[in-house]
Length: 124
Image (cartoon, rainbow, N blue to C red; front, side, top):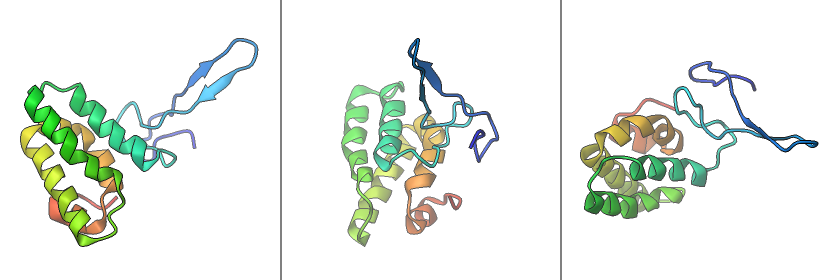
């Protein structure tokens, strides 16, 4: 795989080392922000939390959202977990719309079909 499946941008990783090169593939597209297939669920949730941390959202709101969004780290095995995930993502959409927009490719990739329906997101 040499291009993003969503925007077709080239996948550009980092090379480190001098005599022995070590290629580090990126987890997310630098052009559109979509996660690559090898990005884990934890890496995807961390991406959302990083975007939140880098945002201009007020400290108290950011801390509350961060705590709510930790529920995304869990695969939704039941409807209760899915409802908590929907509530956390709706709070993100309401309180930090710029983070919501930047995170949509990641959110779409980890959300179940029921969550995507509840949030009016396209299919992954």
